[in-house]
Amino acid sequence: ALRGRTHESGSFWTWRDLMYRAAGRLTPDSYREFATAVFSEMVLAGWTTVGEFHYVHHQSDGTPYSDHGMELALADAAEAAGIRLVLLDTCYLAGGFDQPLSPEQVRFGDTSGEEWLTRWHSLREALSGRALVTLGAALHSVRAVPRAELGTVARGLPADVPLHIHLSEQPAENAACLAAHGLTPTELLDAEGVLSPRLSAV
Image 1 (tube, rainbow, N blue to C red):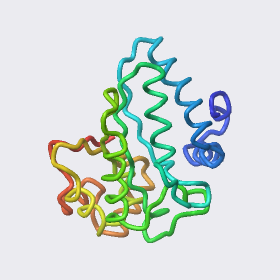
Image 2: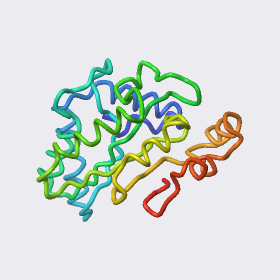
Image 3: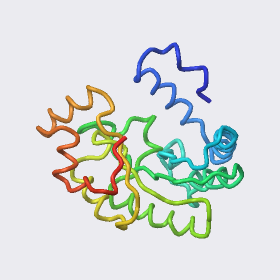
């Protein structure tokens, strides 16, 4: 959906616009097809495991799927390709510091950390018995998860669940975090109790 289409864009932000357009068209069936192709290419190149930072949770208007359709499509793809999948189900609640989700982002979002946790625990049950699939978790970024929700998510997950975050993705995020909280992104995570041995900062 993106290969060969983004290299002339010149910036993260123009790449993101193209990515949002591609993500907006995904359905569980097309997601399964794309993921199977990507995972199969990875297996052929020698990879045995993929960590999928996943936040395309809902329908394009934000309506939840009743059966975790997008997540199960990824699990199906991993099984079809024969690759181990760590599904990093991602909490995505805001469009930026004190900004609502944009129309392109509504399918990524849950209304709160508690709602995301409820969906995460339900997904864990839905994935039980899938030998190749491990359910992990992610906070998208400090700009996409409000400060009050960071600790809610970290405390609500079982202690053995891997937790990832996009941290300090670009200078603009660092500056915005300092302006909003007087803290760098890493200092903010520390203040909210998110920094721990299980956290992977990407």
